[in-house]
Structures are given as structure tokens and as C-alpha cells.
Length: 131
Image 1 (tube, rainbow, N blue to C red):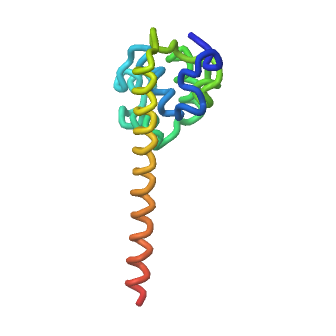
Image 2 (image 1 turned 135 degrees about the vertical axis):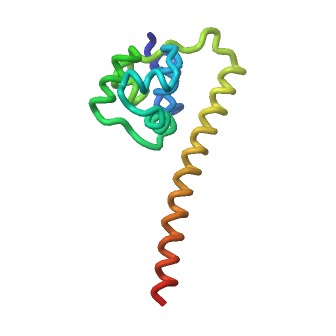
């Protein structure tokens, strides 16, 4: 394990909670289904956590920390003890990680925009119905 303050791997400014969870799960060699089974939740729940669509309850956070061998503080903030960074992190790997991080952010923004669009459509339909 390593401290994120040493090398910035999954640091607060570079990763979301979901990014850190997915990275720690992968570093532990677990598939989403494996982690879901160990936590007693559905695989769709783990997927939603990793995509920052939902957040686990406090008791699940504690279990995640223990199962993945990471500090709860790191999982929540990116500061503290997290998984080892990739060996020989080359500039190409760093660029690829930056692109993946940006893609995750865009996916989250798109999901949030979709929800907002649905809410606006519902409001507009209500206004038209009332006239």
C-alpha cells in the first residue's frame, strides 16, 4: 500500500469516489460480482457506486475498506493508504489514466443531464396539461 500524498495515484483532484473504489477493487483482483457477493449487495449496486450514481451506506463503506485493504479516509477523499500504483507508470499510462478519468466525468455529467432533462420534460408536460 502507498500513500497518495507520495505519488498522486487516485488523488482527490484526479479521481472520484467511484474511481477509487473501482481501482481498489481491481488492485485486489476482484470482479464486481465478487465484491457484491462479499458485501451481500447486487452487482448493479457496486456498478452504481463505481460510476458515482449512488453512494454506499456507512456500514458498507467500513466493509469496503476492510475487504479491499484500504483506509476509509483514502476511499472517501483520496488521502491516506490506498492501493499500489501501477508499476513503471509511464507518461503514456498517465495520459491514458487522465483520459479515462475525463471519460468517467463526462459519463457522470451525461447521466445527471439526462435526469435533469427528464425533470424539465415532466414540468413542461404539466404546464401544457394545465392550460
